[in-house]
Length: 596
Image (cartoon, rainbow, N blue to C red; front, side, top):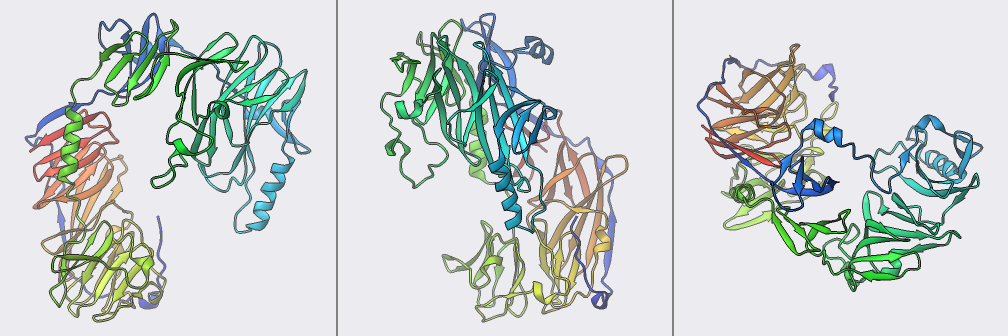
C-alpha cells in the first residue's frame, strides 16, 4: 500500500464532527426472484475419440456424435483425465531448466552444445550498461525438443534478455537447431519465428509451423519446409498467405488451411492486408501441399468459420463464427448446436440501457453553465453545446476522476497527476501537488470533495483535508481507515454527500466493509458491515449503494444492508444494475438476474 509522508509541522488537527454508525446485521433472506440465462457457444474442436468429436462448449468439454445424434454430452473431470489425449501431433517436449547451462558463450543441453548465444549475452550486458537505473537480471532460456524418426532431433530455443522488463514485453530471440550426427546446425529462420509444431515427411524433409511475432502481436501464421539438404522454403511467400494452419499430414505433405486475414500489424485506417505485398486473397482455401511444392485444392470452403478441423476419416468440420453451428463441409451437413440467443439479446439490451456507474454529477458555475465529467474528460456545457475543457496542465485532464466548483467559482479537478485548480476567470491551472508538503499520491481509487467551508478533501489510501488554497494539510483523518484499502469505484455522491468505500480482511477471512459519507459541512459518518467475500467495486443505483462482492451483492440503503447471492454466481462476473431493484451478474457463459 502506498504511503504519503507529511511533515509533522503541518499536522494541525482541527475538531471535525464525526458520526459513527454501526450496522452489521445483514439480511440474507431478502425476497429475491432469480433467473439464470445460459449461453451455449462452441469455442473449438479439441479432437475426436471413438467416432465422436470433442468440443469445448461454454468452457466445458463435450462429446458430439458425428452423426448428429445424442446432442452435446458434457464430460466429467474424471472422463477428461481418462482420455489422456497427450500432447498432440507435431508437438515438442519442453526441457527441464536444470539440463540447460551456458559455458563460454555456448548454450548446452546437458553436455551437448546446441547454440552460440555470445551475441545475446553481449547485447543483454550493453542494455544494463546503458540503463544503470535498472537492476541487472539473469537471462532466461526456454528449450524444447523433438526427437526425429530419421535420427537426431530438432531443438527450439527462446532466449529472453533484459528480463528486468516484465513479460509479455521482455525482448526475446528464437532459434531452431537441427542436431545431426551429434552436431548442432542452426536453421536460417527469422528470429521472431515462434515454433509450434513439427511434421516429418518420409523423404526426410520437415514441416515447421508457428507464428511470426512482433512483441506480443502475431503478424503471420507461418509454415516452413526444410529439405533434407537443409534448404528452407517459406510457404507463406509461395502461397502469398499470412495465415497457414496445418490440419493434418499426407504422404510427404501436409493438409493446410491457407488464408489472408487481418492480423496484428493492420489497424483501422491502415492499408488493407489483402492488398499489401506479399499477401494476396487469391487461391485461399484448404489444400494439400507436398515437399515438391505440388498443390491440390480441396472443394471445402472454410470462409466464415472460426475453426476448421480435419478428422481421422478425412472429413473437414467447421465451427461457425457465432459458435452456434457445427458444419460438415465435406458432406455439406449442418448441426445446430445452440438455437437460443437470449443471452446475446439480453447483453445487447443491457449495453443499450447503460450501466449507472456514477461519476461527478453536473456542477453549476457562477454564470449558469454546467461542468461535468464524461468519458473521463472535463466537459463544459454552454446551452446545448458540449466542449471538452483541456486548458493548461493537460497531464491532469485525462482521465479525470471528479470535479468540484467552490463558492468563488474556482474549479477543482482530480486527475492522474493530482489536483488541478482553476481560479475564477483564469485559463491556466495550478498544479496543487508541488504546493503540498510531502506531495500527493493519487490513483484510480482517489477522489476529491469540497465542502461549504472551502476545505478540499482528498480520499484515497489516506484522507487529508486542505484549507482554501490547498497548500497545507490541516486535518488528516487517516486513522478512520487505518489497515483498510480503498474499494474500486468512480466518484459516488448522494444528496450532495460524497461516499467512499474501504475494506479490511478479518482474521477469519471475512471482510469488514467501511463506508464513509461526508456532507457539505465536512462531517464524516461511518458505517461498517461484514462481508463473506472480497469487494470488487462499488456503484450507485438510485438511492442505494451497491457493493459488488466476488460472490454476490451487498445493497446498502438507509443504514440497512441486504446480501444477495446465488450458487451460480461465479468469481469473475461483472455486475450491472439494470434499475434500483434489478441486478445482472454477467459471466462469459451465463447471466444471473436478481430482482428484489
